[in-house]
Length: 270
Image (cartoon, rainbow, N blue to C red; front, side):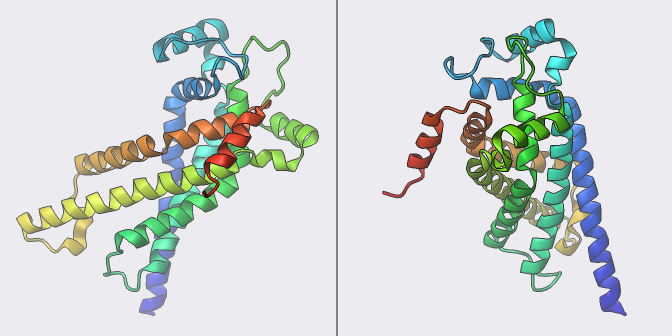
């Protein structure tokens, strides 16, 4: 009876984590989409590869896009971005919790840094395999500008249908290799840093308050969670940003062969 109740609570927590991640993903995209459009255009524009306007910096890019393309330009690729972020974070929390439960021998046992890393890497890889087609469509929609005489895609569904018809199913997984490196390393770094920093703060506060660290959630305040999230996210972004650039350049419609060859030779063993 007790075991059944424990399993029920565990399953409920997994779904609550997945729903919380999905909601967080949606809120993030709704607020940050204009900056994501600017980032994507900076990542692929080397002056020779893609027919994009030249931007001096981020404020200039936002102003130029707003003036020439309007709000629609700033929110290009919004629907696949919302879908991708919501699905990604929902699945990530779900897979991550499942992996941690599988690696832990008991509820009271704290996972080692290596097991946190393995859990996060596993979750990141599964999410990447599920969502790469969505991110590919988002990237291409964000790169459509008035400089194009014709708009290749008119939305998420039209983009998926056109890509499959003209380039085949395999095109939906362009950039999957750097995407896997990105998802696995980014999630692993972020969640490992988060969990380890959380342990340090909990241990420090439990000593001061002489409270059992088993009830760690009661020791942490909203500010603590905010600092943990921001610190781990910044560390992950700084260390994995090059993979984002590589993936974006591989996913554009007319991906130059030099990027494909450069990426292959970069990861070949000597």
